[in-house]
Length: 148
Image (cartoon, rainbow, N blue to C red; front, side, top):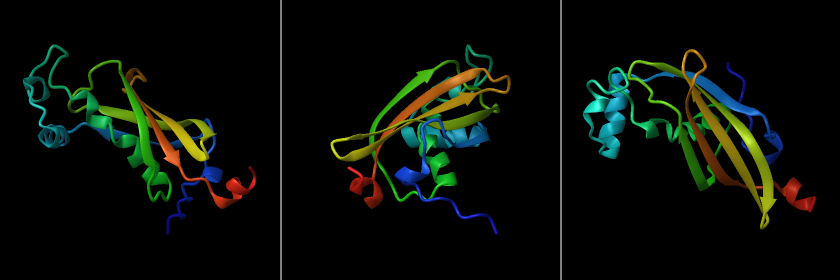
């Protein structure tokens, strides 16, 4: 039986901690499903592109930060506050990439806990593909509130 995942709460995360990581392959089916879901139409996603074959839309990884956190923590939910993206190169259909999510900052503002995460997506040679930034409101536990 796999070990139980820790609760996603203030005391269980630390700045610099890796929230999780995984390798994923950009299959043609996944790219097609994403394109259909967001109504993205461009020949580059199915045929040749200036990048040497079909590529994936740059926003294909946008939800992966929270998916990776959910794979490693028991998370009921958070309130999404802000996000940002930096695209370094096109991800190619058929390519396997590595994703790593790190907790970059934790702070209290207006009586709420805030969490900033960063997900790096790299190719097989550790070359950067994209960097995604995510900020959420994270519930403070009673223990933390009592320390104020």
